[in-house]
Length: 498
Image 1 (spheres, rainbow, N blue to C red):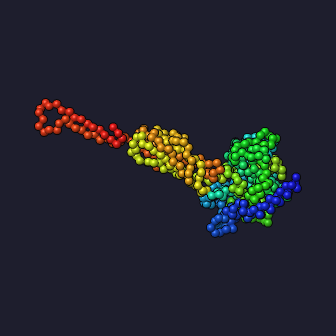
Image 2: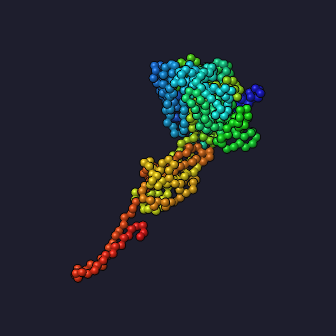
Image 3: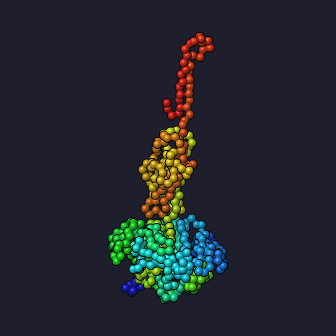
């Protein structure tokens, strides 16, 4: 079996070199160091700026790297045994749809949960990769230094047909064997409890996990990419994003399957700083004793990228969950984890709307429509729009907010990013009306849902209309006989009928 894995690893490395066009782009420098080498106009970026580090070791000191083209900067040293604070995202590129940095406490740290790492797996039977989240537990405790997660970071880059993620991590030892998994989940996975508890979340068709093994301190065999499959191998799988949680413990389907052929062979790039230490970024790096360090030792920094588009992955990742294993076996007991980190790989969308009228003197019963235009940084959005019209009694200070309003017409499909509602004449009540449009992305869309309403452009007011009264006296003579019977006739007219 080991020989077979070694052969597959060799093939993976070879195909990755041949089919480099399918690897992640050069948007982020995957060069096995932390600071940017590029000082021109980005991209490429790197995790930290291109300059030198200022690293004050008094509590509250901000660690910062000057220069340009970093993603993160400004971590805070809080003094031992308090974990440092993470840096802020500094890159403003609109094609970076998400960038997250996690400082995971170490066993020697003290947090609000007391001494220890408050993100340690504690299942009595030992959690393993791919288990049902609701059966997994965690607590505050400790793990061996080789199983510790330190700083972890991730970036989602999406524009046009480009759909990729980059990730990096630091560990605190470089001797012995250690095993780290980078898991990307479409479900929102969260923890319950404060200092111990469980997990809430699902597993879905197409979830991804990159398994990395360090043997005798250095990177072992080529990392293996796994994909969550709902059905047995050999047939057509369910649609990407279909929730299919694992069965009872000990059963096999659904489960993670290794991707050992096809696009997966070239869609992943991964490396470590095997040639020597690298300088830390604008954040506090850690050492084995939980102290601060301005460098990351040999084989303790790792980074990689996955080309989702090459894999044919069309879903939206919602959670990044890095974790460690006790041994090389993919089903070995899990030890430490980070987060789970909310991490979204789909681009935000913007829905702008234009009502057919926003006048303040609309005639009761007037026919009205609303038009929605959806846009974003990852190409023309596809999907559908639902339109809602709030009656005067439903309008709030923000317009047609929340779930208020009546849906007008059938759901409309976007054409070139635009859709218009059917007309409605349900405008007979006097007062202010407002529209709301809700965008739902198409399956496989690069975008998140969005909606829009407001209290001005999306609103109009139905009012009483002016009338005209004309009168005609039975006589207008200037010499009427005293006691003559007279009358007056009034004719009232207006713009909306009798």
